[in-house]
Length: 451
Ligand SMILES: Cc1cc2nc3c(=O)[nH]c(=O)nc-3n(C[C@H](O)[C@H](O)[C@H](O)COP(=O)(O)OP(=O)(O)OC[C@H]3O[C@@H](n4cnc5c(N)ncnc54)[C@H](O)[C@@H]3O)c2cc1C
Image (cartoon, rainbow, N blue to C red; front, side, top):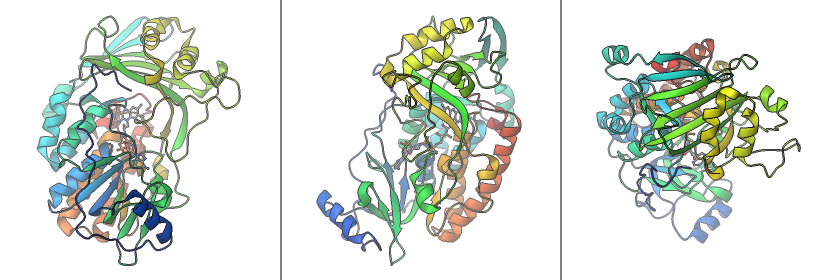
């Protein structure tokens, strides 16, 4: 998804996880035969871990760092569905996220801030006329005085690269999708990949597999997927040109036109490595007006940052062959104020443009007490998908810090996992309620970014 010129360097995913201490695993309770056969066909005994983590996004990587900090003897392995190539949105990490990472290990924040762009603020323009409206300054001095940090602007892949640097080589196995788990008779877990093949055995499992988490469904059948916000998002990352974004310390926003209040948005975001991310949001009302069909993706496998193009044209209103770029240009044509923004879209290769819906767990969709069971828990968007207002990343990092704290205090146990969930569920409901009261979907830096 990112040009090769400026792709943030990701440490190549190592092939192997920590070597198994014991060569065999207990047979899965129900699918033992098929699972064992699949493992045998793959020719390798699944590694034995203390903690397996599904998903090497920010939540999974930060949780791994926190668990290893809590107890360096823990064998922690991450299973990531995609190849760990550079990809993802431009993300403003709120100060509370930085504070959480700092509590885990100050070196992580140093690594992140060394890459980050310090955002001065955002220039606002009108979608209708292109007219310059105002400059909204980031309260960096206030944040610095009060919290010791300012916000940090990075690409999603810059964040995961910085986090991965803190883990031992080989911690992440990429191209390994987790489909579920089975509880073994001896209390351990068999972590299952495609077709039920065992990927690992582990004492504990953390589902950090994003907003359409496979593990959330396996853990709590009927668990609510996040709600579609009736907004379609396109975005891409590419090398920045000065004529598009002359000040790499500022974002440029084209804000809601009168006839589509609240959710129509276009933004240029500077990210590290001389790149920019462009992102635009179209409300479903605009999509219908333009004859563009969109099926919200609610199934397992959809992911906010790691997917390629996701153009959907199910009812024939838009030709199925339309790429994401054509659909984006069609959605926003006729807004004279967006001409400069659409030049950037035009200059972007179709195959790096991502199209997806916006989804959110409403505060009431966050369980009151806990979201896990036994030695299985969730973290990040899998447990609580935030609206896009600068809340989600920080909440993922707070999860990691609190999980690490409880494991440090009480060891790797069911009691620690439930204590972590109870503490986090309270906090997340409060933060989400605040974010909801103030609106959102603005793509970073909203009021909840610093709670
Ligand atoms: C367009 C956009 C802009 C955003 N901007 C901001 C912002 O400015 N500030 C902010 O704080 N937040 C922002 N967010 C939210 C933030 O990105 C998320 O809250 C954060 O990425 C959550 O991290 P996560 O690791 O839980 O999930 P993800 O980032 O989704 O990572 C999940 C990982 O799990 C992998 N995975 C998925 N399924 C499986 C499986 N079955 N097996 C193995 N691996 C799997 C995925 O490939 C991915 O690598 C934004 C979100 C979007 C979509």
